[in-house]
Length: 234
Image (cartoon, rainbow, N blue to C red; front, side):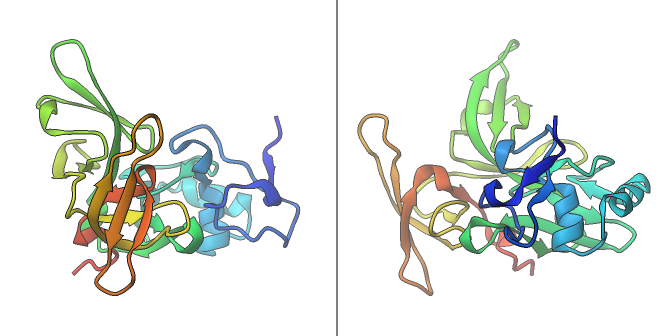
């Protein structure tokens, strides 16, 4: 199987120039599905910390690059929305956040903010013993004891070390959200109205903004956040 991916056919979320070369690196198996960006692209094309695959592998072998609190050695490991990247030797920390046009972008954060990550609940099921398993947007699953308080569309903050839920944000009118796909990707606002659509069609979400005209998008594209996830880590 080829280790290369044609630049013209990469997902819109990948932060690569499409006409500078024919190929780029192909994402390996892992979280985030097809939208996951290979770590090598982040190191080489976004941050400029490596000029090529060899340099990236050398850096990763030093265990100085962490994703969600865990050292990474595979340069093809997919990176996606709301992942936390830590470069311990440089003392630099980033959150992956939606940028203009839906491209993944990096937001610099403080070290304490890098100790947990945000996840959107996309499914929920009961497991043996009476516990509830939550499925998150990146493919991660989490078993919780008191599952009745969580619903699809809610967001949770998970501690990277203990995997415990340390915050819970409900998906409801009045919630602070960001759009992660579509024409309004990267925009932030407050849910004014959730318009339930009969049948199998997506619900619509009307979002207002303090500065801006607001926007309308489908439910799948919005993620509930709080002020600490807007890039203003004050």
